[in-house]
Length: 205
Image: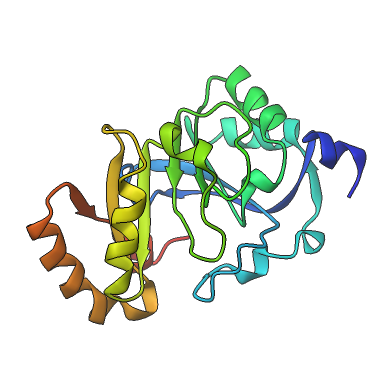
């Protein structure tokens, strides 16, 4: 990777697209997604494994990304891969200069960089979040693969601030088996809400 990538002035860009946020607190809202390549968290059920190898994705200047994003939407979602593998300070500064509201979706496995209006923390068992991510998370989104994941979700819920929104989301391939379990759990524990990947139901990116 080049020096510009190391400083965050370029990022390995997998894709960028304008769509509807399908998950969590901002579900249903128009947003421009910037998907950054590179991830070593290694979730076996990841639906964007092609994002893992950063070298497969062209390094792109953050000014070009900011210019493209600002022509589509006011809300930008930076996701991956794992975006915090890279220095997000230059990208978020460029987006802020254009008046964007900037969200990030992260596993929390790497130190936080950049300035964010909304932080969605989605912890993964393979590389748990750093302690510093819990107090700044606005949203905790736990992917549920089986019933044991509910206990694991509560472990992370105990670490975030009181105002953090709590979501349980079924792993897509097991949604029919897991949704009844999640539904019962949310009714018994109403501090949680259900997150669905609604973009997949309506057939958009």
